[in-house]
Image (cartoon, rainbow, N blue to C red; front, side, top):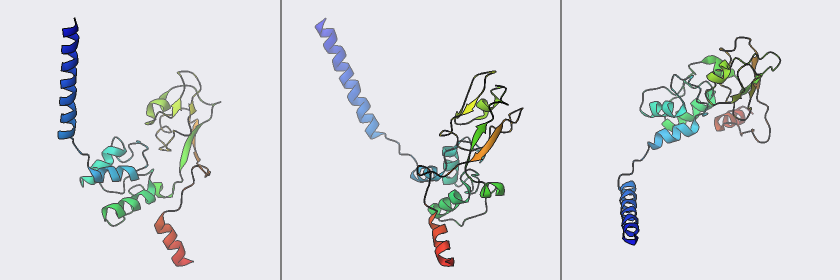
Length: 185
């Protein structure tokens, strides 16, 4: 009995050492440029850029397969940050309406909601909760403002409300904006 336990323990240790060595020896590094691009994207996972999420879009930009102007939720600020990172010239956003759109979150008018669950299915980040034939609601901290829940709603009970700036959500203006303001001021 003791021999069997010691044999199993010895084999477990041996395989652990082999796996540890293999993890170090055959380590695969991710694309650092794709990682940097991904960190600049808004992480809405909305698919409005024609990619399944922000990471696939970042990888496509890094590979030179996609332009830097296809992210409506990120808007002009993200496009300029991507241009600076990659040493490219800024370009107009592919979706001009996105350039002027303020950050917003979905809000469900509860009295009008019929509980169809179509908005839940459309939400890429699972920010909408509710059950079939029951009222739904939006988890505001999870909502990315991608607008993908609006088209499937049959009773149009979802509206987008601008995000109010709070001490927790406020960010410094983009450096180019500060420079432009200083130059004109």
